[in-house]
Image (tube, rainbow, N blue to C red; front, side, top):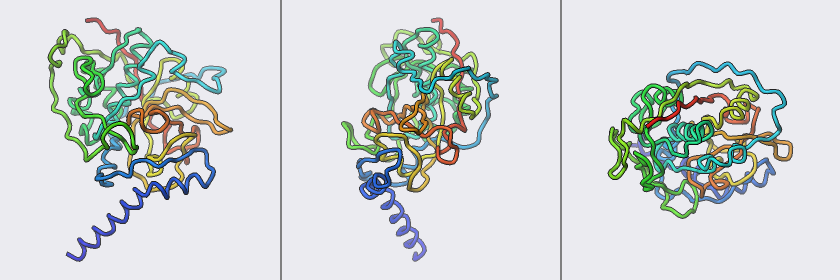
Length: 329
């Protein structure tokens, strides 16, 4: 009993350190580093375990073949998919994974959705719900998954359409409610992790296309070298990519600037969509869309340091993508 009590006290102390956002933000901002932290929601009722569970990238798993990329000449100092393909509204959107470790699925379907618009002018949304719920080879749904497996599944099994929670858009909209991720936003705070929605091979009532007819397939799926010029070439040529990085406690407080790990413990791996790059006061960065809705960070987006492996949380080490196959109903 004494050992159990000691462990409980240690866990409580660790959680208190994680959740003291006031002190962490003050410390970060006092350093004059490349980014600014803010005072976000203090995780009322949310344990450190629950926070970690929302970092849904599982290490290991199947690997995709690496694409042979010849870097473009004269890669620009800055590039933004939101302006390059301004006619594609999905590139400007920020989705919400809710209280579920499904970031691995969101980063994938967000990039897939963008690429359907870029290459075929199809303005729809690929369903995070179906991928998260039905891809057994991908991992554990809300318990986390493998980036590479998500893209392989898209190629071999296809994915139906589906928008955000409560959107009534597409065959299978997302079933996990939206929530405020580490911010005082417009929604209820994220709580303990939701269960993975049950896999179903049907579309919601009222949708006029059958599940089988709604399936969208990938033509290819592949990994991208961690070389910065290769990632830039892939984005400029084909559109946003999915990536993953190690999240530390300070990242939850991000507000603006170019994030690099400054303080705090490691929380887990998190998947995101990379859509561009630039330089801010001499610091090179990637432009990234998160899946914690628009109330977090810079309206749901953030910049993270580019090209410095020891300081960029491994953001360039697990880049995956693929080319869509033109949809025909």
